[in-house]
Image (spheres, rainbow, N blue to C red):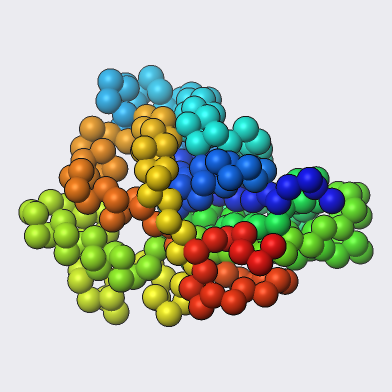
Length: 286
């Protein structure tokens, strides 16, 4: 049994750890909890849009560049435990990267699950975080991260499965990351009102927005407003993926607390009682 509770977050690419969980990661570190991030792919099929970067020069060594960027990003969040699974980036759905035998999309599920089971049994988290079945927005690596992560967190508790991965460990609480559809609507409206482009388009009817989570499924809203500067610093560390025109670098100052100050989750299961209808702490009840 570990001395303190721990949070294990499994993400698809370098930079994903910041976008949906950067605040919670930092908040957990500050509170003295153990924190570990697992990154499934090398991010080698991402765009090279960083200021001053020559795509022709950087792209051939993008996996190396992104390893350095995520190290800096996690440093900004105070996270000291990180593991790269090492699968190749699969690219967006329908692209040739999906067919790469080395890609995460083509990974042998049994092998990938076993590797994550070993991590879970070694780290012994109290809280596990991954994506929903759509992977948030349909990226193959996000969908595969959901499959591998959710199956691994259950398999890790069963001694008969993957016995070579160590003694069984049941993680008490498991979550999906989420962006409430109401939040996307609010964001789009705020940007439309100012004549600014939103990364989510211009739709303000929740029924017509293809991504995001229905509000009635959200179980957990965590206030991370005191860690906004840390989250921004971590985002900026992913320099190759953020252009000077990026949404992340051009949010009006007065809107930053609204957009960055809360992180949302869907509780998949909990072995402990959670009394609050809408919990504000992923560690509640532990």
